[in-house]
Length: 211
Image (spheres, rainbow, N blue to C red):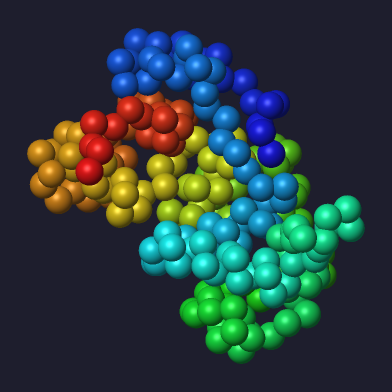
């Protein structure tokens, strides 16, 4: 979950010459906290798409409260639902009761595929395949588009892509374009020089926007 197996020496060597990133070398930053399983991270990432952060929190809370199991050592605490628990429900419940909206069939299908061993998400953590192929496989999961795939790739230690969302557009617009509207291509171009580290450079950048 802490990514302690990742090595950032090369990235630190590049970042130390960039004022907007120099602080991360001193603080040894770079590791992105991830969930205990990739299944949980995929679900949570899907629930961030096309909605406000408050709604994402609500949907995750509903999932945990309705389908999570209590910890034997502390019944007051509930873990994130297992694939098996979610696979046993139905789309109508997820859509209306859990209030996942259009995401309900995506969540249900993924849970059933993982529960039946049709897909092994955990294997992606150690898979020795090119980033482009890994991205392709992630995007084959219903509900995972370019933004979600880039976010998941970063959690897997692949930083070749930037998870461009409305926040990224706002940050880059303020940083380099005097708050004028920018495109996804302009966001990516702003960090192109960082190559395989562009996603991490974007994530750790010391943005001037504070509104």
